[in-house]
Amino acid sequence: MFCALKLGPQTIRSSIAASARRVNVVRAMASKDGPKKVLIVGGVAGGASCAARLRRLSETADITIFERGQYVSFANCGLPYHVSGVIAEEAKLLVATPAKFNNWFNIKVRESTEVISINREAKTVVAKDLKTGKEETHSYDKLVLAPGAAAIKPPLPGVDLPGIFAMKTIPDTRAVREHIEAAGVKRAVVVGGGFIGLEMAENLAHRGIAVTLVEAGPQVMAPLDIEMAALVHAHLKRKGVELHLGDGVAGFEQGPGGKGLLVKTAAGKAHAGDMVMLVIGVRPETGLAKAAGLALGARGGIAVDDRMRTSDPNILAVGDAVEVKDWVTGQQALVPLAGPANRQGRIAADVIMGREQFKFRGVQGTAVVGVFGMTVAATGGSEKALKRAGIKYEKVYTHANNHAGYYPGAATIDFKLIFCPDTGKILGCQAVGEAEGVEKRVDVVAMAMQMGGTVFDLEEAELCYAPQYGSAKDVINLAGMVASNVVRGDMKVAHWQDLDLAALGAPGSPAVVLDVRETAEVANGPVPGALNIPLPTLRAKIAAGELDKSKKYLVTCAVGLRGYLATRQLAIAGYDVANISGGFKSFGQLKTLGASAGLAKL
Image (tube, rainbow, N blue to C red; front, top):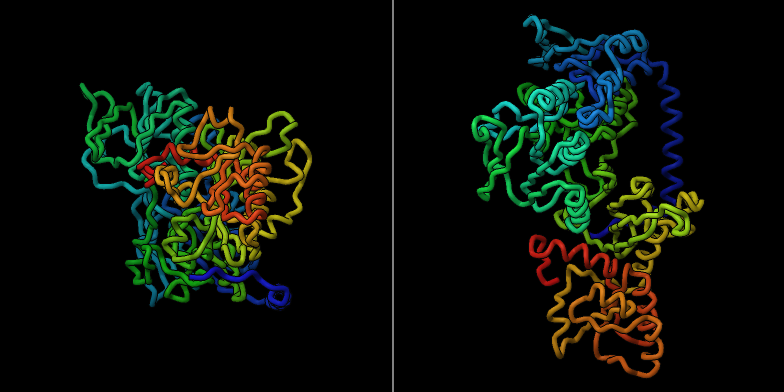
């Protein structure tokens, strides 16, 4: 698949004109009455957002939220931080209460009430009060499904033993906090290395609890490419987390003498703990939709169009339960994130009120997680996702300070930019660092992508600069400049992952790794088989004809800058040359992965 072209000026003008027309249409429709009765199943992110937006659009609509749980509109992203006490008060997690919905919005909320069936022909639902068992039938003009996603609980031996917890609701946090106090928990096993798994590891450690993290895959944080995840692995280990990758859980047992738990793995290991957090992901709640005969997508979520309508035009669906388009790859995806859920809720409300011109453009997976003082963020397509989609791409790595190096506190942001090599269109980025502003850089790229931006736009981006906040050439600018050099043909790029160093170092090899670091730097960390010519001496050696023009030179330095300077010198002199992106720092990061990532040749 070829990369899409950048939006041209005429396309942008057409888009602006279309936006203006949409505004005029909305103004003309502002006084139109919408449906009389709207029922919303699920009152957390997408459902609550939809309900509030509906009321802002209509004062006459009869709006009711049914929530199976005990709370509506709570901050489930904050739950791990309440376990640690970073968020001290449980009440802080309650974004809105039924009383607020009623008083502010005139919206009825039925908590602890589960909608158990839908009659599409009669346009009714049956709701069950979970406290009394009483069932009632309610009619609707429009129905919105926002049931969310359930924590995955695999059918493993011992999975129901006491001391094994999920982390999805406020009652979950209560149960975990109470168990920690009652059992005097000293060690916990966290099963799963995704967002919640990493946050639980950090917050349990914050309470002084030793943590073992078990992940079935070869890396934590699946949205990242493995070489970027390797930075997180090293950080977790430095912070005392016992990390076990590539070994799935096979079952759970009581510990010796009935004390604690043992987590048994597929490789035959047993990890002991006083409690277990089972946080291996979520699965869309589609039972109600499926029973009603609504179409499901290929990934198992509720199928919706770009206006959040299901296969029944009177039923819409939003949030973690729906399947949406990844607009970078064009493929369907399940993306359980709060931001998309809230935007979907707003769009569903607009569509219900007749504002058909509003569409959900899809997702790009912009996300961030904090891990023991390290920030990990990403947006758009990873290499893995782009390969699966058959999309052509190139990548570059930079390792630049978050702000001016002369100002105290500067720290490195390891940055990966992925783009189309033909047009420079941005396809995604990943950033990791123990530095302020990691997520800020990813947000800049995320917005640039939404506007159809290219690496040339990043190169020219005018961003805030003062010594304590950034650099005159920001991390974003530098990544854009490096990538622009590649697209323009000013610099060929190579990657450590593609190199066989033993073969390159063998006699008669048609290519050679040229290390232009100083001799002392090489002594502290050599690249096996590399030829060392420090950059200050390279120009003279080129002039003296000491380098073999029949060979290809793959240049490396510490982080890539000197490698680029050497690459330009050699290219101007007529040599076949490429700069190894990210330099020795990327080499060191990749080398730690070794055979587990298919990198044994490093």
